[in-house]
Image (tube, rainbow, N blue to C red; front, side, top):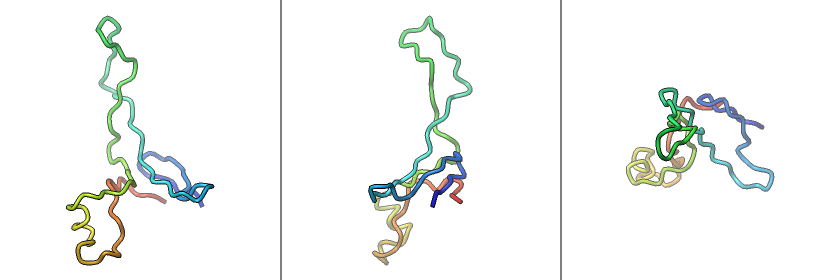
Length: 89
């Protein structure tokens, strides 16, 4: 069953066809304040910034995240993700 990210509106399957799990992370967006100048060295036509309230389902394995998720007291607690964003539907 497809899942839709409320932060970027991306639609994805949590389990891929080969059975592997997919951990969604919102892509960056074009920087609206960026005005490319072709006369400058290292000219790049696209500059991106992180999306506001981005979702990143990759596992946050830092000790602080594990403690906040309660895994220090219950090893069976859900693994923490890096950023919840606006959630999914």
